Image (cartoon, rainbow, N blue to C red; front, top):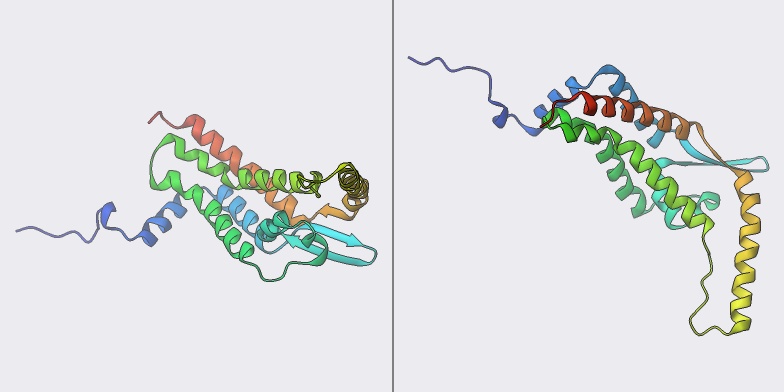
Length: 197
């Protein structure tokens, strides 16, 4: 006579229960860092624009809309498909640290670097969008047209110093950056100490 066990094999566990077990294996410091990143990205302003007595904040979850059109820093972000898609990317980056607890491979510990990598890529893209040439000369533009476009770009770049004085990193940016660094360091430590697989 065979006695059936109430325990299910790992292959038969539902995805939700596997994710729950993986989340339980994450150490407390990493869980706290993930929570801080979540709060910093979705609930607290990453960038703060101050013009006179007016203040306007932009959350990290809205960063793709700002990268697509940097003027949204000043004029606000209405409902956009950028926000939804980028929020999904942010959530995926927050779930990636579960990977080494689901699949025991050494390289999976690098998933702890995902939030920091996303912030670095967004920062670089925003910098390149706001510091590059905003006006491109059409191919058929003569010397007068090219000079006018060069003048417009020079004018914008001179004004960019003024704009930079009105844009500052908010508490959410600092919170998420520090928590991402902590998470990345913990992942790098696990990667270094994990056995070769």
